[in-house]
Image (cartoon, rainbow, N blue to C red; front, side):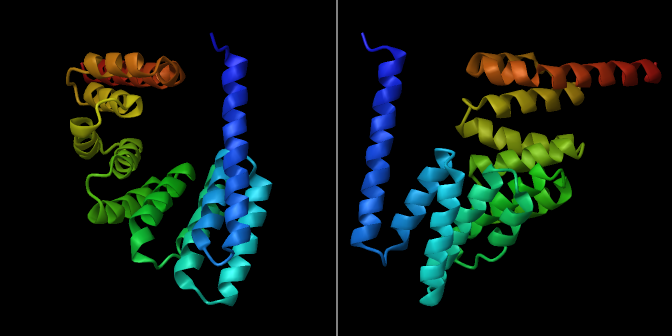
Length: 228
């Protein structure tokens, strides 16, 4: 039976092969922007942030010299995602704002919303989330960022609408189930099923979020006590 170490080693070998393949693709086709973007994105996922940043910067130099705007937009998007991952949302925001490619607009608005959320600026997150929603209304990530930002702003009834839109098609999201449970709790609706689903789908996520739940329950009890 394959043990965990073997699985990890196999995964590592597959990843190394993929990195090598993408490097080869860049050598063979240095004019194809997708090869740079794919390798930079893979290095970002592998937490090799310095190499990813160097690659995106190098590629931007190549395609800026050619004045290839579509390629520049794609690379700015990839580099923005890297800065978002490493907790530099301001640098990410500056890059997402440069993107004019229509094909990337919904994605860049979504990432702008997520970046503002990371900064705790929930009103800006909602504004960009709504713009992204106009372009791609059924995207669960867009609906999630809208729901989460509205929840943070105390707009529970509106947040509920976006969470429900996700759960119709994607009931297997622990974060959506959990936050929908919080909304239901605050609105005085049945909420236990949502929380039970979240716990079943991801015990780890549920355990991380339990403190938040306890704080909300405490606040609600205090509010109800004052209203009596």
